[in-house]
Each structure stands twice: as structure tokens, then as C-alpha cells.
Length: 250
Image (cartoon, rainbow, N blue to C red):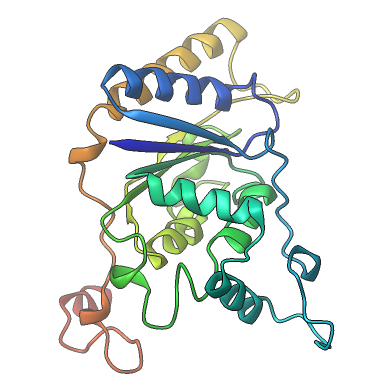
């Protein structure tokens, strides 16, 4: 299996970096081909802007979706975007490794979604969800948090982790990926915030690395997060009245 790890952390010598090392070692030992896509190391520009493209001098405004579609069609997307798309097309599984910052992925990774998942190429009105471009491929988020697990429970002070990761999971499914349940590494204290004594904290980091390494071996056999599909929606994109989930939620 071809596996791409997309790292979105500015410090390679961090716990996020250590989790990347664990994944690369374990997956390569299992015979998989693994590539690392370090967005900070590669100086990936997360900002979509007109200057990224050879714009028509007659154009009086920048329409990002129209420009993405036209440049995809012409094979003239920016070189860094073409590189990222080629990596995604190569990979059977994509692992996104990042810290949760302000209840979402870091800006560099959000911008990666904005620029790399180009309209007219990797998605369109009819090429979405279970008809998406990357159908048959899998993706998983490996996430670190500062607060402990209890804070991210449904009634915890930080809010439900399922809700914080929903936008990213939904975006991945939008382009066709089978999205696996995330691996969340809670309570990675830093910046002066401390929830445990140092010795206990270091021991827990090791246990989290071991848990991640153990899970990696079976990712290919895991069932993905269930999402509704085109067949579940009516002509307005609303869950059909006959769908069982309608009655469970009512």
C-alpha cells in the first residue's frame, strides 16, 4: 500500500514529529511505501490568490473556483499544487498529522485544502461524496491536543471532539475518501501549561506512541466513519423521509 503522511507542525522535533516517525517506521516495517509531505519544511503557501495563476490581463476580478477549474483543464495549476495532487493520486491512504489549534487544523493545513482540492478537477457538482474523485482511498487524522481527554467529552469544557473534527472529516468525505475514526492524542502539554508531573507526562507520551503504532497495523481492515450517500438524499439534498436515520434523530 502507498501511504502519504501530511505533517502540519512547524517543529519537526515535536511530539507531532515523533508520531510521524512512529508511523513511518511501523508502516515501512510492514512493507508499505511511505512518503512524508512536511508542509512547513516545503514552505507550502496556504493562501489562494490571483498571483498564483497566469491571469488574463482582461480579467477585472479573481474568481477562485473558475480559475482553478480552467487551470486544471489546461494543466497549468501552480507547481506546488500539482505536486500535492500527484502525491494524493499516488497514495492509497493519507494520514494527516497535526495539532488542534483554536478548535481546528493549523492555517497551513486549512489553506492546503483551499488550494489543493481544486474545483473542476478534484470535485464538482456531480463528483462529490460517495461519487468523489478519491473514492476507494482512505484517510485518517492523527491529532494532538493540549487539554486532557475529559475536557473534550460532549459536556467537557473544551467541547465535543467529534464536532471539532467534523469539518475536516466532512471535507475529506466530500472528495470521496473513506474517513477512518481519528487517533487523538490528548493532553500534550506545552507552553507552560501542565496537567501532570514531568515523569508521568513523559511516560504517557510513550504510551500514546505505542497505541498509535499498534493501531497502524490494522488500518486497512477498519470500517470507516459512516456518512450518508447520494442514494440517501432527495432531490433537494435532504435525507429521504424513508431513511431510518430520520426516525432516530426525530
